[in-house]
Length: 526
Image (cartoon, rainbow, N blue to C red; front, side, top):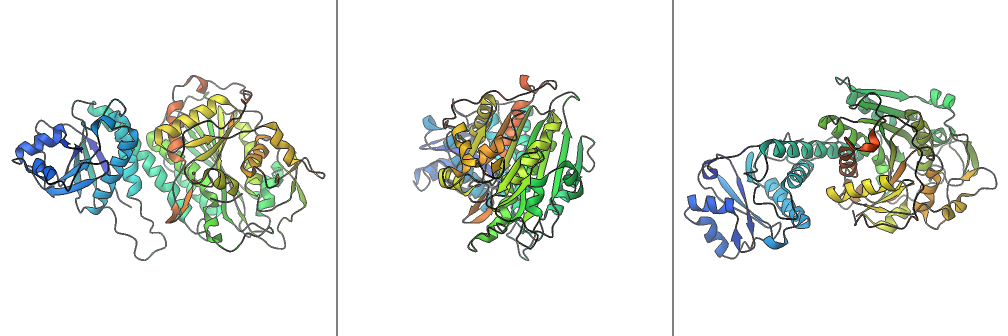
């Protein structure tokens, strides 16, 4: 994995700054201020290149040129029309930059960033996105391949903010973005590992590693014997058919005041989902190693929180199990009892995610949370509804939902608000138990969320269905979502009023549940 570092500093004369690659912005038809300064030192060579017409300065377009002054190379970075340089154009611009740096053999580069601003783009936002996206683009899967892809040649990126942003603020933005990028890559690595390596026990070991050498982090693993004592019959019903024991993994990060109520993240960690007795079709079943991407997202977010040293208390709970068919496996029609005492008729053993999560949500209550957010590759219905661009957002609290959607907008790791109407709960009725674990063919993502909501009535709660956003089928690989959204949400909670001292926090009544534009941002499991 590339060890990429970021440094913010200014230069008295940018033409003399030594670097293997100087990067300057070019808007359609005109050189930026930094580009003009280099052009003066290079006897008009940049302007001459622009006049040739091959490089037009469109957003994301790049052209590598011979060096000028102290720069061995000069990379022209297209930003589009200057009057239309908004966050969408900035993202496209940085995608082009990442591609160009990925193709270059330059070991270090210098970005003159002061020109990458507008009334719609602030430099600290852009630098955080730059570091996050560049670290993420440096990810290479290598765990089980003899010849992994060549690593990113770039080892150091220096950013010159000029007078647009103080060096200290620029460095803070770069450090934050890099930390989130590393969290995304950690999540991707866990998701991409095969199910014979990334087992519930493996996830437990990874959680223990997060606590090593850090007195603010404590990891506890609840084994199956203790789960039985706690009455976690729903979670244990999922692992019943597997030789791999289930694990309930709890990580407490104490970055805030001792009496500060924690933000609790709960992750679905089904390390392989065969469907159990309700066996899945064989096509693409290999992708069911990604059914633990909720757990991966929780661990990746927590790593980012630790790296950023956020002054906040965050608790992670991972419900890890393997869903396999055997003579011991739970059967359709079986009735199990959850930790909350609620009986559940298991009509479909492939709807196992909600079974492990409901016991984890009951367990979360003991932490007296400020809020609980669970993330899960929960339903194929979510993929049908939203595709891969948006994660579905359900919540029993309006402020919590709004804060998550806002965090998704800032990071472009977007969500879309979904309803939790009582009418949907009627589909979960059972003649033989308090609840059925499926609600029929209609609104599958909604009824799954309604199932979970009944175990989260004592606190503010949100559910992210990331079945579409957590991994791609073409090209195949985990995305690391929604680490960016959650990291930003937690950053925004620092110092927020609702994150004060522990108090009884019942949920506010949910609103009408209409889908709200979080503006757009993610396949299938349950």
